[in-house]
Image 1 (tube, rainbow, N blue to C red):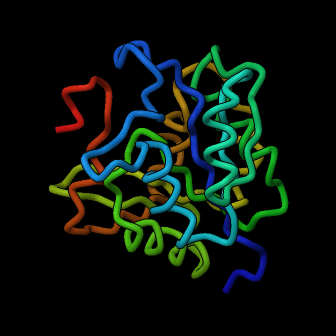
Image 2: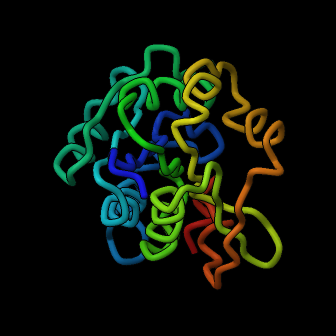
Length: 190
């Protein structure tokens, strides 16, 4: 049983070029901004959340801070998700593990994030939900992989680490289609 905290890393530093505007500030049907919905579903499942944003994104930073995240701007965010993920993990090095969530995935159930966090607390090294046979998000990564994750770069995210240690991945089959649903364009909001 882990005694160190499990920290959520909310990756919110994408450029949203396909969306055409500040995607994470866009409202869902219930009026909640996409980034806030993603944060709210994560924050209840972990001990704390570090949200990684782009430099100069003051509006999003203030919004996520007001909803309980510790926000940090990744100076190399434009180089890709790997940079942002490494930055976020380095901002919380004392964690027993991290639950990595994408801010453009607002439909992940909080119970799903809790299952991933609990699996880390129970000793899993890598854990992710699955829906319909497809691995989804958020992904739980134990401190065992701190060296690899904190050294990531480019736009691949954690794929290289997850591939290299695929035999260590615990998949949790859940009835949560939100684990594979994201927002890329305004049409995805419907």
